[in-house]
Length: 287
Ligand code: FAD
Image (cartoon, rainbow, N blue to C red):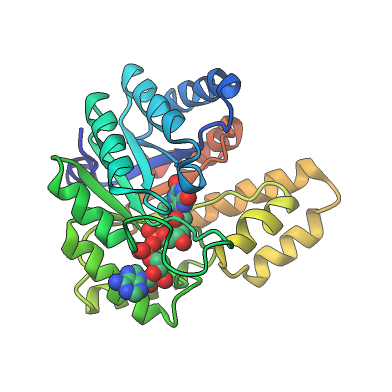
């Protein structure tokens, strides 16, 4: 099943993201997480690709597992430090496994690479065009409501986003954000620039203060005052922080859906219980 068709045929979609393990012996635990998440009946589950392809085999293995359990996978693929031969090999592996949805990304440039990307592709748009020419895949790409950290401005980022659409991207998934007005403004600018493919809103429930340092700082997204106050209030009690983080994510998603943002993607951080709590909070809107 192609994600573009799911989006076209359903009023509201809710999808989930998982990351694969770094080591083989953790794969069965990751599979259990995926199987638990599938019981929540998401429209699809995306599986990330470790930096510079480090989890390549586990990403496709988890994606195949999702199919075996009746779900729809979206397999991430980055082209940083990758040769055309390696990318062709991964595409062939995905095709052979019955995977029809790929999120095509450049990947972060490692600090030791001072020019180029250490591979045959320079930008995600080149990877998208390559995938398009090598099979009948539904292709997604990344977008950044607060601009990509390397970009000069949101507007120049959107200019390159249009290149991803023109190269064959069928939909976009956003980086995490906490202030919905940023997404609404971003979508307006996208529409003005001719970016018309569906935009899926990526939501990260923050359930521990340590996540702010790791995930949030790395993404470069701003933390609104309401959220900063909340973490200051609950930082000393892990359970209260977890509940407050879930509550924030639920309110954020409810506001998005009430304002016509019908495609929601939850960064689960491989935490099924947290995901279940968020889904319970929006159940009445997605039925
Ligand atoms: P691009 O679209 O190539 O953009 C990179 C930068 O180059 C941007 O600043 C853009 O404005 C600029 N640019 C684009 N085209 C051109 C051009 N032709 N000329 C000049 N400048 C240009 N990383 C992983 O390693 N694994 C994952 O699984 C993963 N999943 C992700 C999922 C989502 C939803 C998101 C939002 C990000 C994900 N990332 C992942 C992170 C991503 O790889 C990084 O943000 C990376 O730095 C940029 O990737 P991109 O595909 O957006 O790159």
